[in-house]
Amino acid sequence: MSQDSHQTVRVRKQYHFWPRGDGFDAWDVDRLIELSKDFPVQEVALSSIWEVDEVYWFDPETDPPTVRRVVDHVRLMHEVDVSYPIILGPDYRVMDGMHRVARALLDGRSSIKAVQFDETPEPDHRNVRPEELPYD
Image 1 (tube, rainbow, N blue to C red):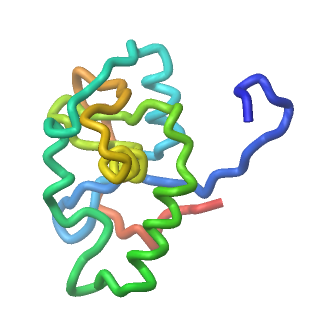
Image 2: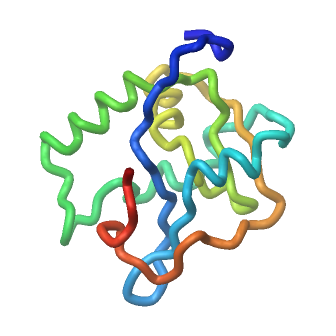
Image 3: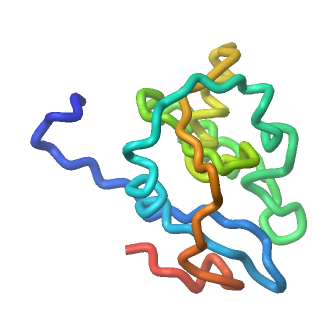
């Protein structure tokens, strides 16, 4: 679908989480997209994205990577629109776009288009649990 299409694609509400205290700091991905919309797009080596070698979508104790859960993420990898750049924090942390990163790895690419913050923006929520946030 072209960007100038009159159809609106509904995307599930998303947050970027980072552990804090007993919960997480959370950034509204819609706000991250808005804040970074005028940033220059650059080609970033996938090898610089350190989180690809970390546990990312799962918590082995509270959210184990069952086959069904892994397949859910594989499905999302196949459905992503790779034309949109990922959003990186100043430390190359992926703030939006890990499924696009995974797709690039799956496709055998060595780099991906990205925009990057010079400074991490303030989170929208502090020390919260994912289930406490609105998803509508």
